Image (tube, rainbow, N blue to C red; front, side):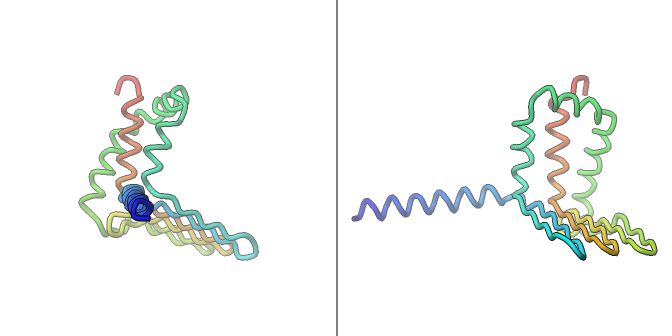
Length: 143
């Protein structure tokens, strides 16, 4: 019986550490709400982005990296500058029937698009931008 308790304790500790590792970078959240339709709420740990980029076929990732190669320095600078401004409004555009807002709060980027019949809210850790830039730079030829 004592061995079974030790095994259960070891499994619980392993699950707790794995959960802490998976969620240490934060959560990517996507919420889409339609007035007369569906509601989609999607939450994913941000650690899946670098892991997901590792399983993308090399030729497809290299092709994408070649297309964004001119913008990689800008992406790198944006990621670096966002660390300096943990709470800032970046974009706020209003129209008669829609509102787009992009801001940074506590190290997370929030993108909100509100229309008459649909609301889309996306949030992700700002560090995710650096992770994507790092991976694309590592496979982009000539960068």
